[in-house]
Length: 242
Image (tube, rainbow, N blue to C red; front, side, top):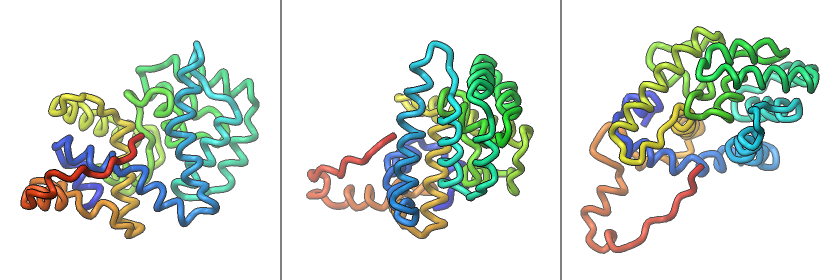
């Protein structure tokens, strides 16, 4: 399975199978990082940072949070140490005021990205990560893995225009999945997690998603359970979700 085939998939059940394996992929990928750094940072970004942002009367991030977010981004993707130094050179007051103004621009995501991009070391990709943490229903992180999964967006260009094309496609697919899924909990951010998981599983040859089939009628495990009466009575492993 490729991340491009997943993006083309219109079956929410198959997307959910991938989503339920997200933390398994992160944990496996983190084994190649120093002392599980990726796992620690990803849990902070996916779980702690959103709660911090939403707990504030006016959504914003602090300088330490912006620096840590950049560390997460560089650990999860391509490492560019110069960016972390640039982000750290911003003042606390400037980061808070700029991020506060950016969140106030929503639902105009492009205006919010433009506002955050005035900070040193922050481009559309990092800006998208800030917005996805505080407004996952509107924004998706512009990871290389997810962007390259969308037809017509390779090679990745780190521009506001390219991000706009990417986000439009992600929002369109999320809307389509919600129309087909009674749970209606798909967001652009959640789609990015799924596409990153599939791309990482493929690139790192982790084979954690080998039983998820997005081109046929289901997963290999499902087919086995349907053909094995005893298997239908056995509980499946409870998977971790974000």
